[in-house]
Image (cartoon, rainbow, N blue to C red; front, side, top):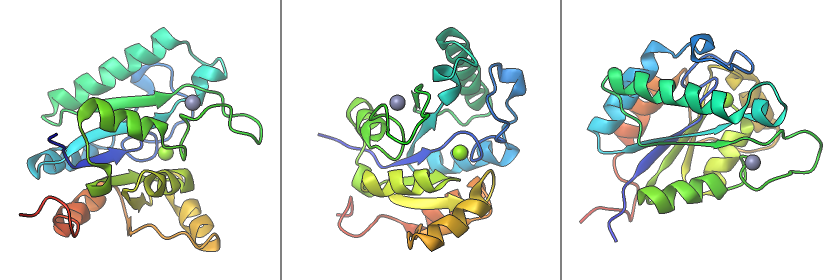
Length: 194
Ligand SMILES: [Mg+2]
Ligand SMILES: [Zn+2]
C-alpha cells in the first residue's frame, strides 16, 4: 500500500488567528504566510491535513451546518491561493470538565488515525504543527514529529511544555518557519529512502 508523508496542522493559532469561536468565515483571519507554508509543503511532496478542535459546536456557539460552511470556505480559500489542503478533521465536542468526553479530541489519536486511513498517510514519517501543548502531545501520540509555533497560544505553550518536560522537535516563530524546518529535515531515518 502506497503511503504519503503528511504535515498535520492545527487550525486556530496556527493557520489563522485564534479569535475564539468564529461561526462565520468572515471572522477567520488566515495568516498570509499559511498559504505559502502549505504551497511549499505540497511542493515538497507532503500531504497537508488540518486537525482541529471546534468545541464551539459542542458548546452551542454554532451548529454543524455553520461549521461545515465555514470549513468549505476555508478549504476553498486555500485552493484559491494554490495551497489546496488534503483534508480537514474536526472534533466537535465541548471538551468541558476534567474527563475527556470523546476520543477524537487532541491529544487523543483518533482523528490522526482516521486521516491516515482515509488519505493513506504514513504517520510515522509525518509532522504535526500546532500552538498548544495538546498539539505537541497529539503529534507524539500518533508517532509524528511535533513542531510548536509561537503564534496563537504558542508562547504560553512553550512554557507549559518545558515545565512538563515535553519537547517539541522544533519551535518556530510561525507556520512558515515550521514548514521550512520540516522541508529541511528530509526523510526521517528509516522511512521512504531507497
Ligand atoms: Mg490552536
Ligand atoms: Zn471529540
